[in-house]
Length: 210
Ligand code: IMP
Ligand code: MG
Image 1 (spheres, rainbow, N blue to C red):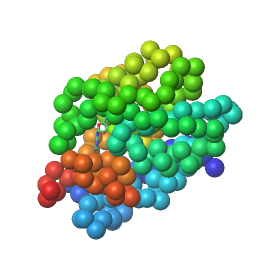
Image 2 (cartoon, rainbow, N blue to C red):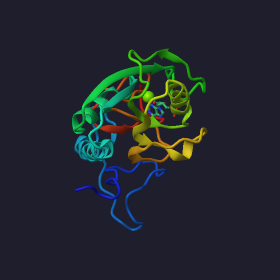
Image 3 (spheres, protein in one colour):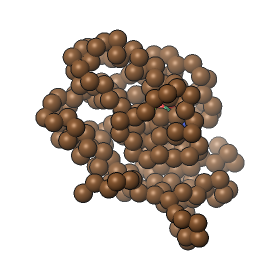
């Protein structure tokens, strides 16, 4: 059964800048903390439930047609692995890599293709699979170059969306969770290449020891 909106995150941000998923006056649930002392935003189970819903939606939308899932390395690798197993569609994978955030939490602003598609996408149903839609620079760039290859359809699935950070006008067709302007790690997402293997999505607070 598909919910109309994804579940609220488990945690609130302890510095008070983040409190969503509840009405004012609600009791905010105690934050779960990982073995590394990080505050959990979405548990592995919440992610699994949402990914299953997204997979079911994509299955319906594909209507029996074939799909090429294109993961954006490295952040989307874990999401793609789970999403691919949640769709019941004849699917192949490809991966691209783009210049990323570097070692910190700030984007350089420049997007560059580091690894191109392995297979032609002309005439195919393409789903770009991304971890986070943030400023939109990456996906706007990828959308532009992919459209030059004339796919039959081009859609975007992102696990997280930070709409308040958008610079380029772009929306995803499938969004796992929409979040405020927070830096998150885990479930494929990194801070200076670390934390990608956390099963949960966690908050990276500015004062976290590195
Ligand atoms: P955009 O081009 O600004 O939309 O950035 C997209 C990329 O920035 C994502 O694919 C991530 O790799 C990275 N990114 C943006 N926000 C975060 C975050 O909160 N944690 C980790 N990586 C992030
Ligand atoms: Mg990414």
